Image (cartoon, rainbow, N blue to C red):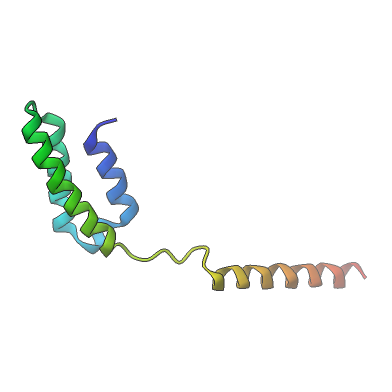
Amino acid sequence: MSVSAEIAAELDALHAEETSPGMAAVARRLARLIDDADALASVSVGADKLRSIMSDLRKLAPAETKGDAVDDIAEQRKKRREAARQQASDG
């Protein structure tokens, strides 16, 4: 897979277009330049800049809330209520 395809997938996962569209556009452009580069020096410089931008974008990404302790407790509570309702309707 190409660098630009991998970067595009990561940018989508980070919701980078929403949090920092300019930096996301630069990251996409750098990735395309790396894919098209012939000289190792060009790839090296581009990769270093891309790494820095992606690091910043990862820091700016919205925090994932799925699977935290509050969600786990709510899910357990929901299961207990469903079980109690089922038991009440069977009895």
